[in-house]
Length: 260
Image (cartoon, rainbow, N blue to C red; front, top):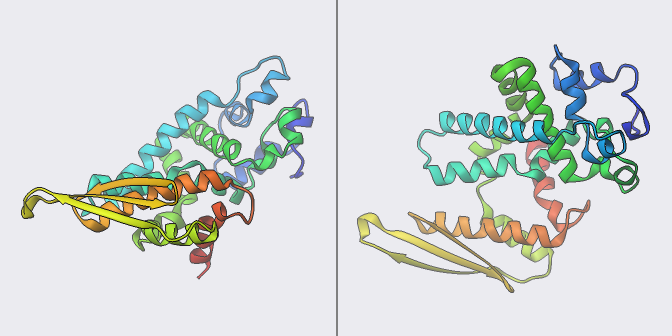
């Protein structure tokens, strides 16, 4: 399939549905669902205000959350809800979804308006993640929850495996590396506990310069990991998402872990 954006076409090109379906490994009964799932609002505004992928994105976000939650719940029976929620957030955040969208070459198929297309919208993480969720919503409507579950678990297979290896959960190490890469010094932790020994609850605060985050849990480690995760996210947002930037280091590490 051509790598150029479909924004310059009045309709998808010849062979377009089958090329996308090949990446998804799902053959649509109703191909119009896939067409809608790849219409960014900027393209719709330039083409008579037709329906964009935003409603399908809303649906796909819910389906994705359900499938990932169900998978984590069934495969991590001894993990409490706080850590499950943290793992889910690591798997379904916009940066992870954008990486998955790139892996299946979704970007060139998204219909973008001229403005978005000219400013590199085909590789914008926010657009890629939204479009992927819309595609998941379309697959759910077309093939039901079983089809959506099969696709989601295949797309996230490697990342789900990393959850079991605790790669994602070591936010303290990720924060230390990110802070060093940004030249912000060493993270400083403060921790306090309250309650009786048999029901102790810990609160941790970590600071990297002026950036602070707080976490809590039934162990010092859990509290520190929660605080570190928050500061990692804030530093990543501040540092941007350009290739090679510190914000992209976590994705690079993950790819290295996958290939190792």
